[in-house]
Amino acid sequence: MRKWIVRFASLLVFNIVVLLVIGFLTPARVGWSALWAAIVMTALVIWIKPAVHRWFRSMAAKSANQRTKAGEKFVEFLLGFAVAFLVWIATVWLSGVSIGGGFFGAFWGYVLPPVILLIGWAIYDAIDDKVEAHAGSLYDRASGGRGSTAAVSADSAPRIPSPEEAAGRRELHDGLTDEQRRMLDELGKG
Image (cartoon, rainbow, N blue to C red; front, side, top):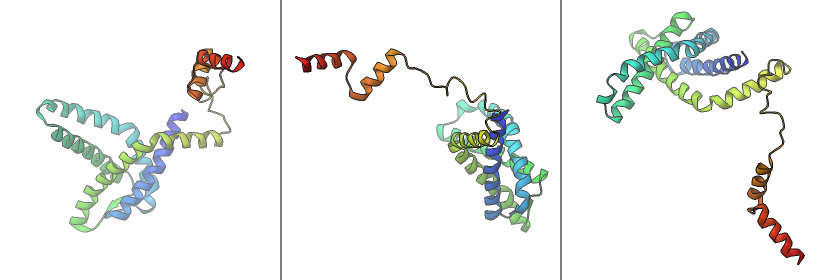
């Protein structure tokens, strides 16, 4: 449960920022609707996007052997754009976000935001481990350690290294094996 809460919260904050950027750079009117739209978008990204992306990818895989590498990259971009477009349409439809500016404004209000979403998702994928780890530590601090029993396991408990591990660490420290260290000690005594 903790993992899902942390993932949802970190993605929610990121989506609020992305929606505000979309509202600033495109004819889409986001405003205070960014909060509800981010909740809708986060739910769509966590639970619906993977299924839709798998479905599109399975359809595209049927003709993958007929494409070049550049063609495959182009198809991957189109698949990502299609998923982002569907997420954007659902977000606009289920939240208070509106598209204004006449015909051309509506066109750019539906074409540019999916591109910004793709860029945002690429950035989030690059930093999600760090963001979720930081959000997890904040969650643990806020809950006073409750709910973090899964996080506190044998991995975080101090453990005594085996003799082989200790010898390996000493060797990494000075580059000498235990036998070489003993020989040098005996030379120093004689």
